[in-house]
Image: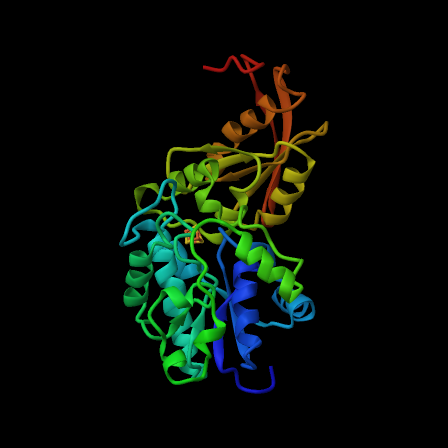
Length: 330
Ligand code: SF4
């Protein structure tokens, strides 16, 4: 964006956030959008931020900036002030963190409002009117935070009061129904957007359980630990920062090989194809990891299996002796 933005907006690529931005752009205002990413949401963009921003500009005429919240987010997740939701999702702390970062950016850019696609009553907790107010207060965004889709049901923001934004052209959507949004999308010719499902991995019970395991004993996992957790079978070891992951299929194997950095052992069968196995731990745990690999491979009935391993520039081979193959291990 060459000219200074007048409004900042949070962007998820979901329909509501696109509509909210379009409503403001229709009033002739320059909008700068922000997208936050962490290993739990939006991380597929990591490393390809410019390409993604170009795509968003081309598809929606929206100027986008990506902010990676990973470091602060992973610390917050250890002990969120307002606790967790049903799984390991710290929704209140998460929203407050995003809006606080947006406010700081808004102050730097000297914009008059922060726009979100929130709709009153759409989510049972986080989009309840009282929770929305509470989030505003906690992130010091009261008077600044504008929800164009529900604005007529909420107190006017400063940008409305000062006449920068015409409140009459905003909306009064509420509840879980999607019809008004779909009708508006048709009117604005918006057809390409992400569905609301599939957003945040911390709401996925299986993944959340793995993450919770890593967070035990005051350990804060790294972004690459969390990336690895997305693939394969997960076996926690004695300490929170020690685990084994065994690929389940070709895609898992490719992802594990790509994601396991120099901190991890990569373990494979020497003489036949089999799953890629990743160990975060010590060299003494290699046999345990190799055993897990064997149990999920064609070597599971063998009494002796040749194994190769690699970690950064180190590598080696050994023969795993298996007195009780086929899973009948003690
Ligand atoms: S679902 Fe995930 S991204 Fe959404 S508010 Fe909760 S923790 Fe944050």
